[in-house]
Image 1 (cartoon, rainbow, N blue to C red):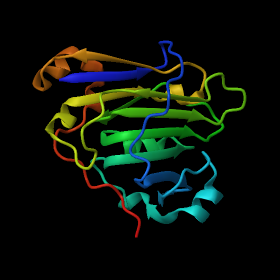
Image 2: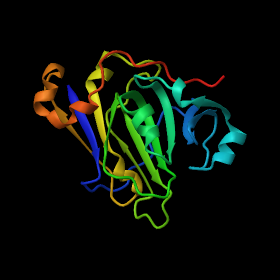
Image 3: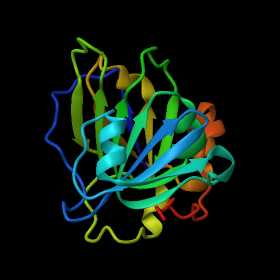
Image 4: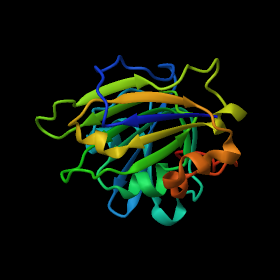
Amino acid sequence: MEQTAASRRHTMAPAPSYGAPEHHNTTLLFDSGNSLRNCSCSAPVQDCNEALANSRCRCHTVTRLALPRSGLRQPGSLAVWVRELWVLEKLLNSSMVFHLQLSFCGVKPLQSQQLVLLGLQTLRVHSAVPGAPYPSQGIRVSPLAKTASEPDSSSFHHMTFIDVEVLNGLSALKAYSIIGPPPHTFSQFFPHLMQHQPSYQSPDPVLRPT
């Protein structure tokens, strides 16, 4: 099994933007009070601009009670605007996402906390905090798959750990890989991450606009 981590504690120059093919729509998720706005956007939308997203994308509201319990399955491109940490904790953690863009739109800095994803290939992070030394960064976490339509079995064995504090824009983004150990011995080598260890069963389908 290969584990990959994106950490705030290492330095790296900002990388070029990597993502899913441009002709694919992007799924955009952002919190709206105690609910979630779920949008499908055919063109890029300025980070954290909810009014623009609501006018240019096909959006609908999903209550927190209706959110999938076992994570999302998003083989395409997913953008998540974060104001409150519950969006990452309750929705994105333990999800399978191939191409992810995380944008921090809040005011209060995020504290260090691990986010676990399956099958991640590319990651972009953006911080709207004024004066942040690293407002936008991108990195290729793993080699791009031949097709991005459906995950294969290897996606469940490729795990990415993201320290959400990197969204504050105060430090550079870094990725590194560890080859091994086998999945069934994972807890022996990473005991403190067991509370975040995702299931190897297929996650719930991605939320789709109506």
